[in-house]
Length: 269
Image: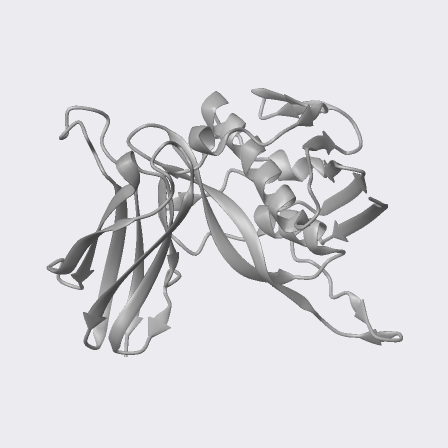
C-alpha cells in the first residue's frame, strides 16, 4: 500500500476555504456518503452512532471526514460532539497506519470527562478508518500541532490506537434510514437499522406527531452474539410527521440496565 497525505485548513471560525478545482478554476466540491461518528448517551454508557453526510472536500476523503467531524453538528439532536472546529487537519497514511494531526483548537471544549474523552478518541478513530475504506487501516495516531499531547487532560495522545471492539463502543441499535429530518413518500416505508441484540431480535415502533404508536413489530439482524449487522423492517404510513424507534431486546424484563435505542424523526408526504 502506498503513502499519501491530505491537509484541511480553515479560518478561525472553522469554515473550510473553497479548494481549487480543474485547471486553476476556483470553486467548491464535496464528498458524499462520508461516514461520521458521533457520541450518544445510552442507559449503559456513552456510545458511538454513525451518520452518512455530504461534506466539503478539503484535501482527501479522510481529511475531509475528520475535518467535518470537528466542524459539523450531528443531524440527530440526541447525539453530541465533544470536538471543536479544527482550523487545520492533516492526515498521513503509511501502510496500514494513519496519523491525524489536529490544531489545538479542536480540543478547546473543557466540558469533557474521562469517559467522554475516551469515546471521543474512538469517534475520531472510527471516522478516519471508515473514511479510508477500502484501505484496511490498523491504527490511528492522533497528534496535536505535530506532537503528542493530552486530550482534555484525560487521554494521552501520540501513540497508535486501534478501533476498540464494536460491542464495547458502538450503540447496539441505531436507525440508518430514513435519516433525521428526511422526507419520504407515503405508502410502504422501509426502514434500515444496524446493531446487535439478544438472539438477534430487535423491537421497533413508529409514532405520529402526537406520540401515538401507529405501527410496531420486531426484526432480526446481526448474529445475536455481539456480531453487528443490518436490520430492515417496514410500515405503511399516510402523510404526516413521525418518529421511528429501534431498540435492542431486553432479556432481563427491565431488571437490567435496559435496552439501547435510537430514534429518527421524519416526514411522510
